[in-house]
Image (cartoon, rainbow, N blue to C red; front, side, top):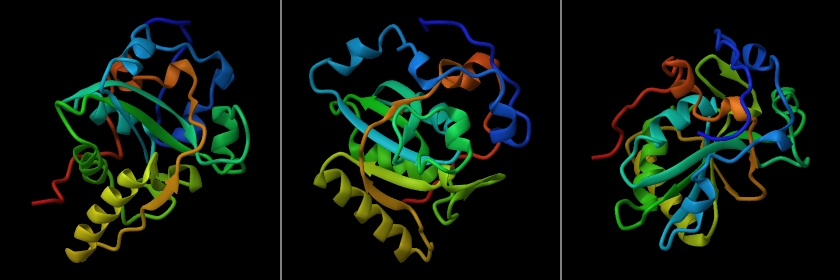
Length: 203
């Protein structure tokens, strides 16, 4: 992965307090070497999801079939170029999120959304496991009406199974890439997700 090297803080049990150390501004983020190339490859598509700590979310998506590239960041807020510290304060309205670029010849947006619902608990409002706050909300940031209807369909299936899904559907606005040390965090540190686990929810 290219770009500037930044010291990676220890995860600890409280991510907002532990991850807020030794950070740089969101504007210092450097794209992975292949990100721009992947983004413009013919027939790739884009999806944006929020489901708690973006470290764990990226851990699963970057391993999914058909995924060409991932990056974590902030979306859904009302300020420009938010920093991690600002997002953790709960005052900007942003959610920790992941942007996924995938190949629709190998997978589908529905497959991506199913993975989203199966790697977090969509019944938890404004939290995920030990992480509490609006920035950890469960949300699908849809890019068009087809993505919105797909998410609505899957939420309907889960509710039919008795799940009290609180996932929000929000039109995507600007996605602000997170600081470099957050990108592919578990791959850099060799650690494992502490609040994201795969649970099959669909037949």
